[in-house]
Image (cartoon, rainbow, N blue to C red; front, side, top):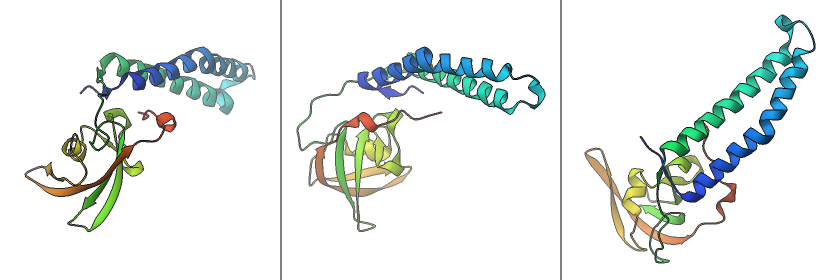
Length: 167
């Protein structure tokens, strides 16, 4: 399955790759060499810890490069201010539970329901897209589903604090 990413997502991932390759990689190699120089490797915890950190960095680089290589790039289209779209914050009323939740619509790579970030490919995200305030929307799940009502839509805050999910 290909992740849907925006050009901004790819730029952030490439920036992280560059940082890991140009800065972090050199530091971690130096730490491995320093720990190795301490002598007996069979009882050298620092060596194994440094080696593990270096390997995790390399794994993260490969993971991000593979994501970029296989990504399906989507455009952030202009939308009306009262229409649900990418990177908008939506307040949704669930009549069955008599509860209101707030979500931000994001790309597949950023989805995290615990933080209120729902993917455009999730059932709720798909159902909400391009609808307006006051509309009642049916969310399909399996053979059934549920209804929600859109209470408000606003522009999302700065997304610079977002983190690309780890593997």
